[in-house]
Length: 422
Ligand code: HEC
Ligand code: HEC
Ligand code: HEC
Ligand code: HEC
Ligand code: HEC
Ligand code: HEC
Image 1: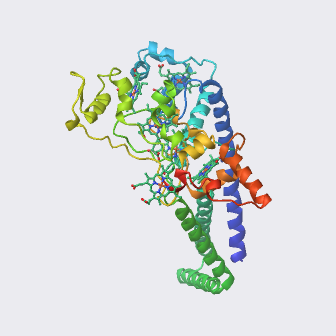
Image 2: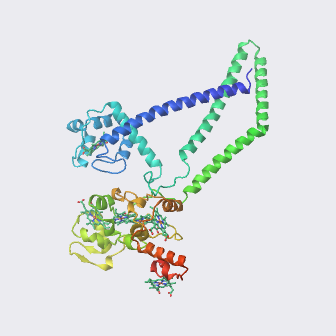
Image 3: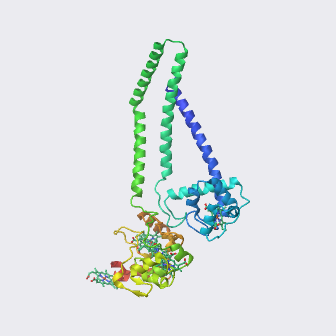
């Protein structure tokens, strides 16, 4: 009566049920997150971002780490009420932001706020786990390799399936015991019958193990899972997207390049005329910091490194020592990359490759810098050859070749210093 087909019927039924339930819960949650996203974009993004401080604090880490949702809801709906009530937490953040004051959102219901919180947490989790990639459609679209989510999902489904099979087997075994006991058989007969059943089950398992197709299928599954894992690992080796080391001085691009709008060229002039963008010397900082923020301990690090004494405004070169900025972007030595070629000739914006630097308090590596990344952009980017002496020359050389005239390496730019020198 109870044979393998029955077990499998039960098994498939439970798997269907599980899948149905999972689908139901995720679709419900997705809807809420979507509502939260719409509200967040409509009401909050003018002052908040998830990852960086704007008028208000960066909400990703803040909302994710806040455990008191009731308080959060209260704050988001009416922060002024909390401040008036002298709530210590509210006063702390209020003063931290120089009493900037957040809008009161009395039109938001508790459910709306719950959706917003849900969205922020989900989105922040996603951002934390995903490598930082350029926006969609960008010429410099990054490579992610296969989606890890899908792989983990598959592994999860397989594990769940096995657990379900085990549990069902156990349940069936104990039900059998019950049925046999009910039949008023003597105790020995029951154990005998159960033993017999156990024997039968062992025989079936042996049969299954001998079934080459089944074993083959299992082995193939293992090989695919192992192979995929290895592929993903190898694929991401030496890719440092998101790398964000702590720098010796808390220099902020958000402040200098973003808020104060100092041009990149002011500090990284190399990027426009040479291979290297170069990090500015501290003397560049001194153009302003001789007089700006002279009391800040961070600025004193600049003074110490230069051997500068703010009291006497004299430099003592014997006390000077270089500041060791931690290098973030680094190609291997065998790959040649030239900034001026891209920035000046190709007119590629710094942000296409380095991301929104002007919003970064601390710089992180935005693009993967893999060969695939270089190649993809080269395949997708149109070259602007008009009014470019190099390409005009190429056209001339082309004409010469067509006319069968002599063409030297020199006529193709072979005398340019940069062709042979780094
Ligand atoms: C007009 C600008 C502005 C808007 C719009 C705004 N906020 Fe704020 N928010 C702030 C400021 C400024 C602070 C810092 C505290 C202060 O100064 O009042 C803050 C603080 C917060 C905090 C920190 C509370 C804590 O845990 O310490 C949360 C959470 C928050 N906002 C959520 C939101 C949400 C959600 C929205 C959209 C519904 C929103 N904010 C819209 C300006 C704004
Ligand atoms: C006031 C000077 C200054 C300005 C303006 C400036 N930077 Fe920087 N930049 C620095 C300093 C100093 C560092 C090294 C410390 C660090 O990484 O934060 C740096 C580091 C970087 C790095 C990381 C270098 C590495 O180690 O790989 C990039 C990329 C960068 N800047 C891009 C830009 C872009 C793009 C702009 C314009 C939007 C810009 N910078 C404007 C001073 C400046
Ligand atoms: C064009 C002028 C200018 C240049 C060049 C400049 N800064 Fe600044 N920097 C400022 C101003 C203005 C502030 C302070 C804004 C404020 O009041 O908070 C500041 C703030 C800072 C702070 C924060 C100090 C604190 O304690 O709040 C640090 C650190 C800093 N700069 C480092 C640097 C470094 C390193 C360089 C050189 C790579 C540099 N700055 C170049 C104008 C400049
Ligand atoms: C086409 C992509 C691309 C563009 C555009 C680009 N960079 Fe880079 N940047 C890189 C790569 C790749 C590296 C790593 C270079 C290496 O390791 O040799 C790098 C490195 C840097 C560094 C580290 C120091 C150095 O010279 O290697 C700085 C600073 C920098 N870039 C600033 C800039 C600035 C400022 C701009 C805009 C004027 C800019 N970059 C435009 C790709 C780019
Ligand atoms: C954002 C797009 C973009 C990315 C990313 C990019 N490049 Fe380029 N690259 C260009 C453009 C555009 C040109 C053509 C410039 C011109 O008009 O001469 C170019 C030209 C070059 C050239 C000169 C080719 C020739 O025919 O002389 C080299 C070499 C080069 N890139 C190397 C790299 C390397 C190495 C990387 C990756 C580390 C890279 N590029 C990433 C856009 C890109
Ligand atoms: C066809 C390749 C090529 C071109 C183009 C080229 N060089 Fe050179 N250069 C070399 C080689 C190879 C050496 C090293 C051999 C030597 O020292 O004699 C060198 C050596 C040098 C040196 C001596 C370095 C030292 O330490 O002794 C200087 C300076 C120099 N080149 C500058 C330039 C300048 C400036 C240009 C552009 C006008 C240029 N080169 C163009 C190939 C080239």
